[in-house]
Image 1 (cartoon, rainbow, N blue to C red):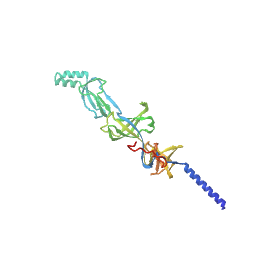
Image 2: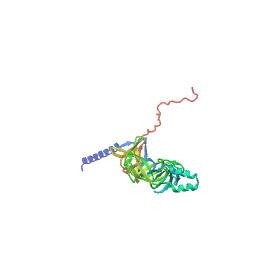
Image 3: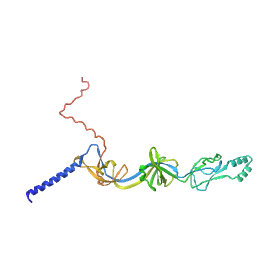
Image 4: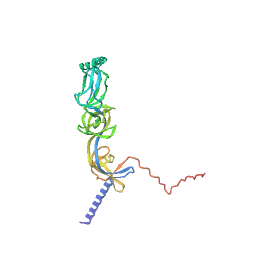
Length: 321
């Protein structure tokens, strides 16, 4: 190899090395004073939809007397579980109540005779369920429009889901339930029904979603408010970063990492699940790697430095004139 060729080869290598160093320098930036450092951690991430709702009877029935009259006997109380066909109360028509009152004035024998001849009318449970309201007591008069008892077959939760979250709600989906009155109690449930028609509440379009609790505790009452968590997706043992650490450049996700000599480097990463608090990192960085986050806060003011050659203005001594 001639001396000229050797010199040319060395020159090409120097040019290539210089170009690489220039490219590295072009992709480095100074680390500003308003950045902080976080580490890539490993943990679990869950995507969920949070909303509120209230406890309501799935099937609420008002039991009204077939005829106006008087309640003679109420056989159930609020909270009692009843079965279909069970007698809940005995009612007297207006005519029977008047006859019994007249017979009672003539003595027990006359009263017993008319009670045997003129039987009371029963109120019967139309389905299996629980008594959630007892509106009439024995001796009170009622009309045909008065609800003597109210029965419910099962308590459910009516959740109000924003239309923007409807794509993440599905039938059979697992839901966490926490009642405001019993915040320490966690109840699980599933999505039983999704409304086909929207409603507008405070200028927000929502859909009502029925959540069926897996168990109905004794303390659950109709009308209670609750916080509901619709579990969409969960991943365990994955790499995580705060959302502020991941940016988008040219349609790709990138993070900023510390480089040599106080510089920073931009590294492309592949992201996965994000729930607004954490972002899953699939590739690009490893567990424990440092990542820089810019808080957007102004850098702390540096202490003013005075040149030793500049004149110094001295404060007058106390008492000096």
